[in-house]
Length: 216
Image 1: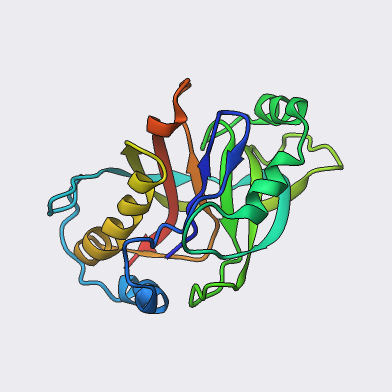
Image 2: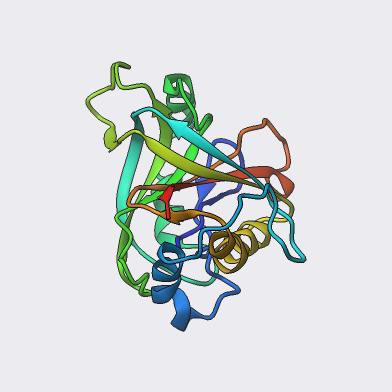
């Protein structure tokens, strides 16, 4: 349903395969519509299936995503080389500057996917932003790109395990098992991956997938 955003170390994230890996590609254009028409059932903190997930619903005021953005093609398998080159071109001190600028949740350096094609066709373009979240009144340097994020609710899904397989599997499970059994549907907005806890091993780090939602 959305490209997945991964990382190789805390200061140099890269984009891996879309989170739909593990879901047949011909279904990629229909999962979002299915989520929007799912039956309204009682919320549970885990998916009823073989892969439990830790989820929470967060009501966030407006914030901004700021950093370095690029238009890149959606690629379903393997590391996206366009994202990899985009991040590799940034000097090391720029990652530190961004981390110092962030002052709100989602915390830390973020991998953001926005303006994704409605049908998630492979090869279609999306906006990828490597950056941080800031409050609306935070001064922003002129050389950074900005995505304005309106107030709204988010489902936050925590995933721990080998990367990128765990994150891809988490999104596939959410699409197939979480959304159809909970009273939420996706709404327009960026899809964000954060690494909320400092770690020296991002191959096995805990990640948070932030998806914008509204009542179904």
